[in-house]
Image 1 (cartoon, rainbow, N blue to C red):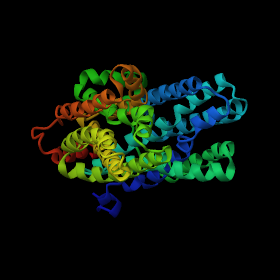
Image 2: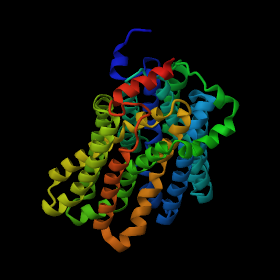
Image 3: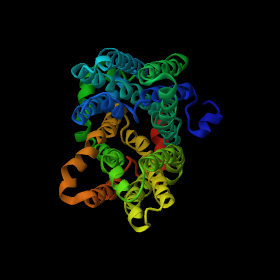
Image 4: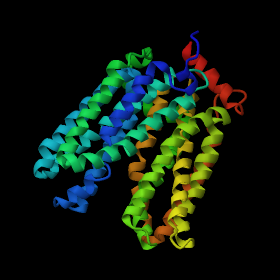
Length: 424
């Protein structure tokens, strides 16, 4: 057995270090248009309804690809699945910018942007499967914490900072094209420089279609995996619900658009830092405890604080900012879920990850749908209580996601046992 390295102690499998770097750079390119594409399209003459349809189609393909990524990675290896994701992303991007966006050909834009949505889940979430196999015993929580650190840091932070410069210096269309460079650079690190081995699941290799179906049927044979998937949906439902109604609510309480954007940006700066912190906390305190208390209960309470502090503080900017930072931190409390769910099964970890990844994709619809369905009848106050209640429910559900061991109270012992079986 090899000696522990510094990266081992940090929780990063040394063989996958360049893969982590690749994910960071890839997601920076993928996420660079997130904050400005919609208003840009509106300025060019598209309607709100067309924008909504465009993003709905994009969200559908993200959810589908998120589910496929786990079983495809286990059947074909993560590297091959990531390559497919890269190629689909490049094809969708070229079609969207070069054919659809140039003349605002909406049908072409719809097809190509939806195609592009298959790209990043196949690329990034397949790497998450790789991590679940490569992490050393007892370090899986930290390993996935680092994954969400680079994933969110690239998508929501570096992408936003880079795009703010690129739009100003290059213009909107050249800025979009420049994303291709960053995506390709990330792929060089993750697919070419990264030489980590992956021992393919022979059963999955020989029965690929069976494995794809197993990505759904596992919820029947392993109901705890299904519970984990539900908790994962709840995790980021508010993240996609908030932008639909919270900016208007904040404006009504005296916050300018600029102030709200600073708060929203700071929320995710806090989130990426705590993605890493809660990976370490989960490995020490226990995965279920971390998810239930910091994730479920923490997000439930801070969701209410974020909504009610503007009312009862007279619109105090810094108090709202602190509530936002706390919510972003607690949102990261769910990070150990990516370690807990694949540890529920001794094999078919790709199928388990498929359910978890599907749970990561579905909130793109669930969040806005909750707002659309209920805001007319219960208002913004009712929506915030629905979201907070979902978080509290997730804390209760997490108590039922027990690991397969005699002593379920000692999560780290079980994690070591599971990982040891995996490494043997």
